[in-house]
Length: 225
Image (cartoon, rainbow, N blue to C red; front, side, top):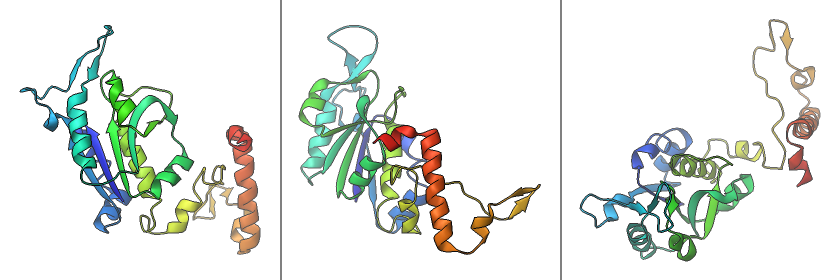
C-alpha cells in the first residue's frame, strides 16, 4: 500500500508515522507513506496557502491552487482508490471503514486546516470525507495519522501476529473481553479461574460472553447495528 498525506504542517506527522507498527511495516516494504507539504506548491513568494473567505467572517480558508497542483501531480503518476479529506463534517470513522481502506492499493489523505478548504476541492477531487469524532482539531494531521495507523495494522504482515487485529474491539461489532496476565494473583486480586483451566473451548466461550456483556453495558449502540 502507498499512502500520500497532504498537509501544511508536515512536522506534526513525523513522530506518529515513524515508530512502532507503522515503522516496521515501512521497513518491511508493506507500506509506503509520503508526506507532501502543500506550501511547496504555492506560487506566492511567502508560500501562503490561505486567504479570506468570500462569505466574510472569522477564519481563513485554504486556497485551491496549491492543493490542485499537488493532487494533480500525484494522480498523474498513479490511480488512487480514495482521495480522503479529514473534516469534522465528514462520515464518522470506524473499524469497518478501516477494514475497507486496508485492502486498497493507493490512498491520498488531504489534511484540513484553518477554517477549511475551498469547496471546489471537495466537489471535484475528494472521494471520501472522514471525521474522527464530533470535535474540532487545529488541523487534520492527527486525524490522518489515526487513519494511517488503524489501516496499516490491518494489512497482512503489518503486525507480528496477524490474528491479533482480528480480535480487536469493533471487528465483530463487539468490545474486547477483559484481559489478564501474570501474576495470577496480586494483592488478593485473582485472575478468573476459567482462564487458568487450560480448556481453550471454555475460555473462548467465556471471552465471547464477556465481550457481549461488556458491549451491552458500555456500547449498546453497537449491538443495535
